Image 1 (cartoon, rainbow, N blue to C red):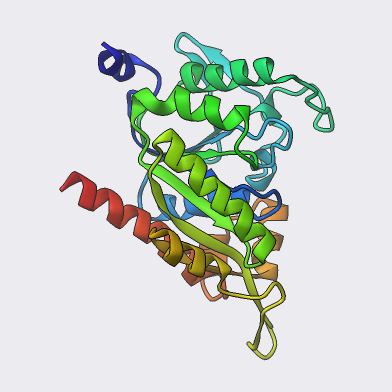
Image 2: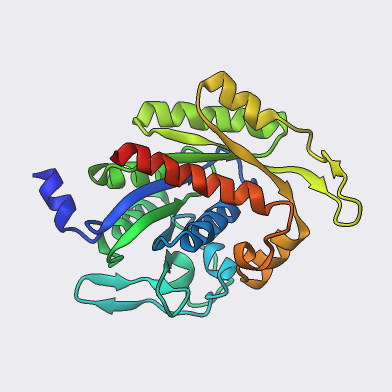
Length: 272
């Protein structure tokens, strides 16, 4: 019965669902979610992003659609489309706030209710991938998200860390969360891994290096890659531009496209 209900729901046309998680704030989950969506789009895929970071919704701004409104249709909420081809669609509490600077001062039950509503009531249509961008930690929102998505059999989770020991330690707890909730770990991404000088191309490891790769090896999960600090990437996110299309020669480009390719290769292996 649960599988039949899942097929008839608003997520019935979504082929693959993956979550982007981290135990630490400020490690770049939304950056990875955004660039993964753009990379998958350039591979010919239709992608949605569900932003369940209710207190810090940054996805709308990263796509420069923060002034867009959400509309209703017979099936529920219509997501906000980034382009005319409707190749990337978004849903975020950022679209529902009266003012962009409004704080979401809610207790757990109200947050959990909205997450369940996002999962049930957004009319995504046909998607190849739905990326779920989550807040930091292993709290109520994460449990609600995983439980609400369970009938739709998520592909798994990408864990994002920075190289420092403090961040790696928090992500280690996120691995435990995935194990306890039965969520498959697709791999670990080490973000802000070194700064490549745009003038001399020398790499400086500002936050040390290798913590994410070491953690992946220790946990026995794939290491998806290291993404360096890149001024062009930061600028693209600030201005809502397509980094993947505009900066193919940047230092972060090969790392980001390789992450997307590994996700695509994993889905092909799963379906074969």
